[in-house]
Amino acid sequence: MDKIALFCSASDAIDPVYAEKAKELGDWIGEHHKWLIYGGSNTGLMEAVAGAAKAKGAMIMGVVPTKLEEQGRVSDKLDVTFRAVNLSDRKDIMLQEADVMVALPGGVGTLDEVFHVMASATIGYHGKQVIFYNVNGFWDDILRFFAKLETAHFAHRPLKQYYKVANTFEELTKLLA
Image (tube, rainbow, N blue to C red; front, side, top):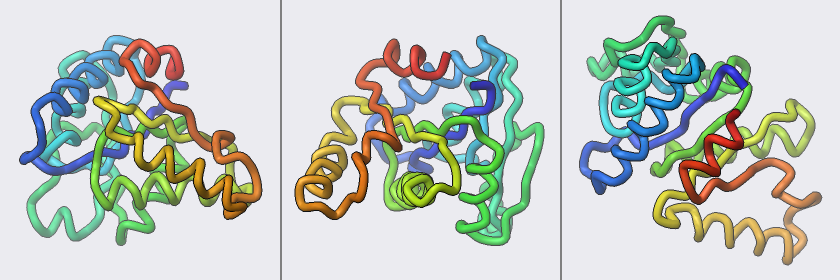
């Protein structure tokens, strides 16, 4: 998997451990000559991973919605910029360009991206998966909710077909190798 899409927080007000883990992933992406595909923001975990990946030689693709550009929140680390009309367009481009998606801790936007990938996989648009990087158990509640959806028959197939979980950096890199 050479092209890794990353879904994550754009907040600078979160626990620093998440930025440390984002930088560690960015370092690995660069050291292993992978492409980073992400939302193109110059804030939060987005900028942390892009800065680290770029410093280690990765190619960086930003999929930038016009609102982000209008607000002056575009990273200067981008090698390739895709301009997206809106967030729906951004998700479609990222999904099209990436081999795999990694979800670092994030908020509503990250959830939207994860659910978009999983929902489109459930009806056969693609066979790509999301890897939840479960730093400090961040995704535990969502993962329990997925199990509840299955138990209550709201999922037509086992949802684990559409995602994997990495609880450690070593588990994550094995899934990305």
